[in-house]
Amino acid sequence: MNGEAVTTIEREKKFLKRYKRNKAMIDRLKGKLSALESRIYTVRSPNLSGMPRGGDPVTAADLLSDKQELEDRIKRLTDKGHVYRSEILARIDELDDPRYADVLEAFFIDCKNFDEIADEIGFTERHVIRLYSAGVWRLSELRQEEDAL
Image (cartoon, rainbow, N blue to C red):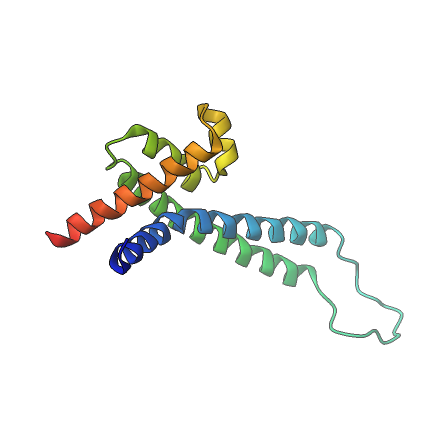
């Protein structure tokens, strides 16, 4: 395999991984949102004793503002994820072998690992990895053909 082929394959993998990375960011933000929502319900009332306390108090308004910001980020990433998903699925649909398409869709869209895919479709994990590699290779060949036109 020459250097140009490796570069094309890496570029193809980067393209295919966009949805998976996007979904991981959304999941991370949803976890932060969940923790923030639990903090909103446990905000204490201000201390009226007149005794000084350390730091700035966190108000419910501050937490609600943070919550709105997180929700906006999640929505923006979700919208971007829909675009990524349809672009990747369109790319995968170009494959002529349905086994490649099944493995790549399960890996990059359904975010399953090779072991889960193997159990689901009845192949060994090693064979699934071969199908994954061959599918990515074929997509990179198709991209090279498109670039040549």
